[in-house]
Length: 112
Image (cartoon, rainbow, N blue to C red):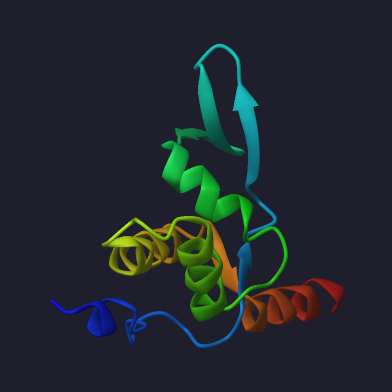
């Protein structure tokens, strides 16, 4: 795979900005000695890389902008774009991240 292909955004990742689902919270868990993603039913232990990605999604950000930011901060990470794409797909499937479109829809349905 060439570097130019590696930075192409996977079509399964929405173009709309992504953000943390409000039902989840990032925090350092002393007992686990790592960052975790807390939710009502439990927690998920996060790798340093997963925490780095999720922490940048506290405010809406597109996948393309997120990857560009990470590539700027970690220029030697050869598979960064592909790895982040795979993680974003995983986070979206588990509803850790949502699109701003989903956030708006949830807010509207709760206010009715």
